[in-house]
Image (cartoon, rainbow, N blue to C red; front, side):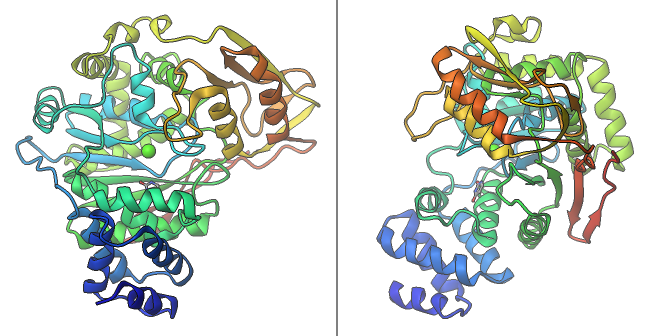
Length: 446
Ligand code: URA
Ligand code: CA
């Protein structure tokens, strides 16, 4: 079998056989196929697509391209949550401790910031001393002992995805449903998850901007997980504005601690409750979302969630005292308000641009080896639907280099549209996708 024939076949719009898909995935993992041929096939897949069988086959080949973690030593179902990525999306740091405090076992492999989106590993590393690397043995022991661990991907997990993702990033082939679905689900399967809850973002800060594409992605992932025999479901949630108010690494840790301490709430907590209640159902700890949310709420109000976060941070080498005193987190030297250029209602935001503003201030990487500044970022002072007076702050920039603030403030002003009319508020949960089908959920009314 020649790789060029596989490329030609996909270019013509034909479905690939399992053998052809194996050649592609193994060739990516062991570098036996040159990057230019891998890239050509990736582009052909973007144009011609893959059917459900091809996508499932690619997922399994990528999963088995490296080692698969065995979590069977942990008592109970290990339940995992994965977000397709967003801005101010700190659900992991809120719901993992809450779900673990309710008795769930969460063995989570997280990622770093990518493009305009933040990454949980970078957020955890902003906590003094906190590490995100450990042996598989210690990972399993921590989950068994305290109920949760959040670490980075080991070298030998899904090497085919590692190679293909790096190529996709630089060849314009990221936003393709079968490629995203196989990339995400292969990593979840390889990390040993017993049940999977997916958070597929939709809107101006999401990988998939339209609801139709987001539902298609959710369906593709649920379909693959089901074929692999895993309980799996997806919520399609709004990324029409940053989910939390804080964007930046230490800032997002602070917001998670504020929420777990009962000092903050809002959409970040609401989406965390929606996802967390589904994790409890998947783990057999709640019968329905009502019971799941009630248990999560009880863990929030008793402070058990905050205690669990402290245990996890301490177990990973970090200073657990940040849970009592967020002042121990890195802080930027300057806070600079971004004034509203006119009066009116907050109508719309380009959330991807807000993510890039935070990245530009140093909260994310522009190049792979950039060093991030854990302290910097921004805090949103408004949400869609709020009314503002000219000059009132839209957001507050947290910067160490005040020379960067002027351009960042101007970009924030361009990114947030202010209108005369009060807009309809975007829903928080757009749809729930399970093996049984798609259920729409009610949006919030303005
Ligand atoms: N996240 C992933 O892990 N893979 C993708 O393809 C997109 C987002
Ligand atoms: Ca992520």
